[in-house]
Image (cartoon, rainbow, N blue to C red; front, side, top):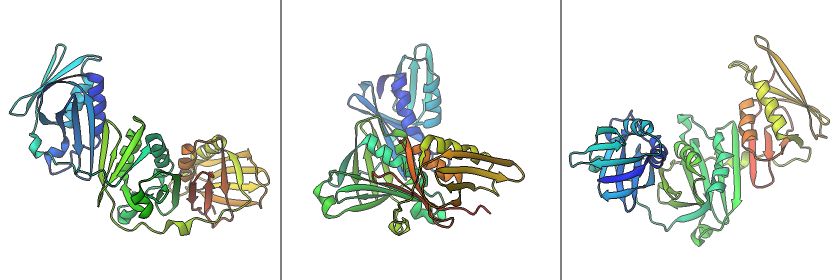
Length: 368
């Protein structure tokens, strides 16, 4: 193999796939990146066997071929090479790779392509197309509610319900739940038989990191895996197996007396109150009265804070406690000037609905 490429393009490609490599595996090949020529591109691939990512980098191919290189060393070398310069990569038959850039020369020992695990192949039969920015927004307002508790593995991801005429995402960790639904033009097979899949946490994190670099995402399904084709980048992942709980039964019915509050002001007040939380005393207090909201926190060994906000509220007086992080997560991801918060009692969940298919449910905490 022999190719020439620009440093910045190659570095971006390595950064796209690098996080999938692992040094902890008993298989040394999983700490490597596969490089293989593909027309006028070099295709970079990394996998940990649960998730695989590929990135196509535009190069000048002088000789076809393939080799794998240790990801960290390869990344560190390319990162330190001179900026805006051409790099020559040449691999010999014994998997020795030479990297040349201006007056700099490196030799790296690689492993053969044959040892690298093959990513699964997909047929386009069960596939949908969705704008990348839409998919990224839907993930951004739900993914923070995913669980990372390995004993509840079925919650370690985002539930995707595709069909009959919408795409819906749901995530929950048992203490909060986020769901969003958007209309979608779907192939007829999804209208006849909607599909449910659970995309695992690591794949969701990779998608949030890489979505938005292109215009459309093609999502292709097979029995227990999913592929996201994002143009020059492809993410392939195993699916979480199991039955997602019935999330609809935990979403309260909508109420009339809602608290309307400026999102930025509310977010900043919650952040400030959270400064005085501790491991033993996590909850902040929200006190509601007519057109007024008081956000406060009292931790005897640390101190106390109190902040008053002007709001639109005509309901009954109420005091309720919440984990501030659960409010911060949703408020910083909602792109709107105002939010409406539904509160009914200190023991009942709080709900945020945006009117465009998004619902967030969060359980209260004791403040006594």
